[in-house]
Length: 459
Image (cartoon, rainbow, N blue to C red; front, side, top):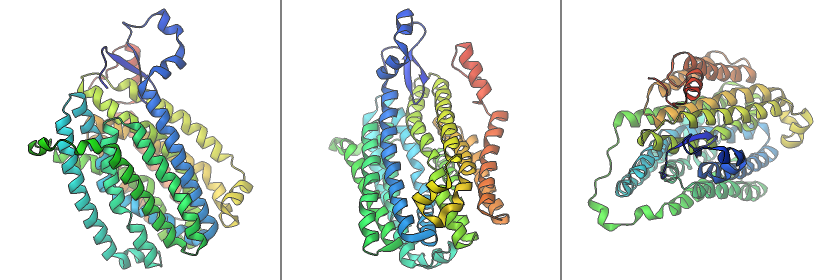
């Protein structure tokens, strides 16, 4: 939101503090805690973090119920279809970042009519595209079943049924995010997250198995879509706006946004699909269980990046530097990721057996390494959203190259679950190493800019 005076962000997740002209001894004495409480960005980040925690807890209970009732082999099928659904939906869901960026820009310049026109067109065409893609995927159930080594056609069909909800939901989330209505976004996350364990338990008890679990996932996605649609219901209003042409989106920028987000989705999800297809059934299930725990770290970067994108975009639109937001976001991501990596590396076998069952005891040895890979991926995610806010296609292209490299490397070399994790870790580390060496917003340049007091990075 535009303010009456310039501000510089120095606290994680978009916290805004007074600039040096309005800072003084009284401001310094107020303490960090008081400044955070006064920051809309910090409050938004905290509320969203709580919602994501609820979503995560619900997801864990959902997956735990699947693990306990289905065993390693059938849980591998569920995990594979969930990951495949994400990969298929992301070419459309990736537009969420573009929508959020454009909405934040239009909001910053006061063009509400443009937002409404863009909303109507985007929802209409995404719904049509989502239905077409879902229908096509359903028609290809048999070959998809063979490709991903999932025997049941019903499991494949119900896993694919959520695609249309993922696609439309991503568009609606983009508008909610760009309008900075983070409470509504949090409500969609939290309520849909709670619905999954509440509904999956009876589905498994009555014997619906993996197909029932995936059907519940589709219902939860539909609930999230309904909530997000309610949050932005005002964008449907204004019948006099029907003649207002929606803002035109540059096709190259759309391709960059979709490609970059799809590349990151592949980098962090295709490994589960490949592990299930290339390893034996037991090893695939063990890998999926380890992924379930380790990929929690991605939620850290998701919370940070969700707040980062619209705020960074608004600053760019107002010709202000977004570097302080980036530095704070990276710092928060690194700090929380280190804590999570250490915690997962120290998890005892008996806790894994208690949570997942004896079939998954081998997952224990994978947790620390897997968590390290996902921690690096989380940092990649924050940088990706920042470069997208600046309309810079180079970093998304780098992530795309890493995603292709990962697939080729795993197909050629997959001796064990640990080998698949190592490939992912090296790909993420490679992205960050190239970024620090050649890219504009490297850590060294950002810190120099902050120390100079300009907050700007030379091009």
